[in-house]
Length: 183
Image (cartoon, rainbow, N blue to C red; front, side, top):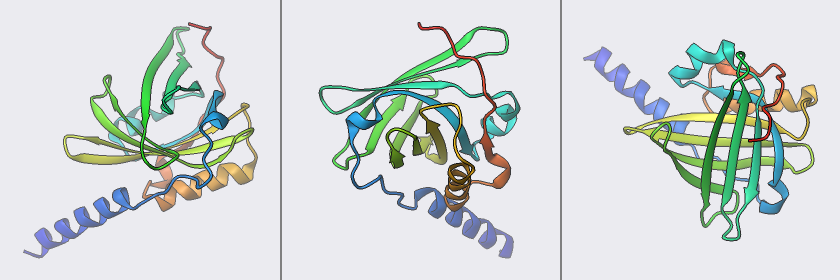
């Protein structure tokens, strides 16, 4: 009975960490995030990341606001064999500026994405709650306009990730990588 109670309590605490309300930046400007970003930091407790983390490198994202206020996101990362991994999503705006939702066809999950902190000419901190089969995981990403960020911003990302329930060993600052050629 005690074991069952502890398991239930553990599951409840995990769900509270995942569903804790992380709000987008108050003065979010959709046009400000437009353009090219480099993926500098990646943090999640998702099992696939634990097994693939060692091979991950910096990639790029091109964010393009639509006329309707949505956000077209095009990701690219150069693989070690010279091929490119690419993925696109259309994130739909919500009633809360800086919060978007989208369904990933590739991973078959629902995504609740929030632009938590952004300095439009320097960095963006993105918090996403991914849900598949009733199970939610958190993914935090740190983007930059260039391939380098200050140690203070890297630490801010690490602390934010810890505060949102991600284990220290699942927080990665990605190594630099060549870029994919334009598609």
